[in-house]
Image (tube, rainbow, N blue to C red; front, top):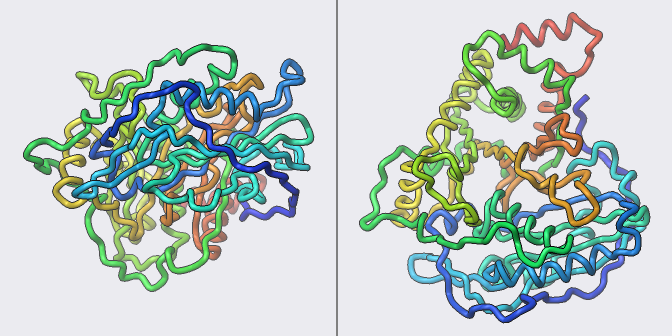
Length: 456
């Protein structure tokens, strides 16, 4: 059953002094502008990510911290902009000063085992600030490191790889590509199997720029809600949907014609639960923004193989809290599909043009829920020599100061989906209760039937 997160786990982490890891060989000193998709205000933040790796007998005697640190220096030869620092030019335009200043790296040990983090391992994680220490004066966006790593060895022989990423530099696929290169080199390769491609000019605004699509995600919305989710302390939790849970959810959509993916159905179901949990007024608008990556999805291909910048948009579907909560689940599903359908090459070009025309605005945070599908992202397949991770992905829900971003991640066993959620404490309890009305009390057919009736 879905329950709010609690943990009594406490452990001690002993860190060594941070080091700056530059590229292993000299790299070009140059200034490289980001794309007009990269440098939008909503991506000017750092993402905390984490991977949990178990002990592997074949790696006995190998130190994961030293292996990854050495591989990082070599990987940065190919991805040398990541060792630089951002500068801001006229019109808030961001560019990378490829200066070889390096990436902070911390080596650490913790008196805890992987088993103590639970099964399955999923966010939020106790004492996470100890597993990914923020080096003073490095947590900004401009003139700060673009990556920061910490490798923490565990007393069971496993280890935790945690890192910050400046989101303006990469999206999920771009980050997986870089980490894949890092993993390949850690396993003995001399160079990445996929050559990195910069080409950020491919996603720049036209000259002159022109907005050709409707962008509900960038509409300025007044915050008229005195109970807004931004005004109080937030609660982090994650919910696992395995085969049994998904077997219950799918029939809720069986009467709606067409092919529906697990992600579409789960998103529609959770958006409705989340909206109910916030106890909004029926007339208040709510937005769903689906992060849609355009790699390989356009004809002709918009982005070349090896591109590691941001290549996504997040079109928004808009409705009211009353319409979403009061209608059958098919209504939410229709809005999910509409948002996905908006993501085209022209839509992305229109976003780039909008950024230049409107000064690179942030998406509207007011009563918005942003969802990213990382189920098949490849984070869990990254192998540094110890096999696949027991969890690999975002360390928490939210992005920057905005809590309303959720990540849907594949489970380590490939048998389910982990969804990260951030809500006010009261709303989190209601959200968990809404889900438990479906997923819990499997033997109580009366309550179970009532929930089905309310959804249908």
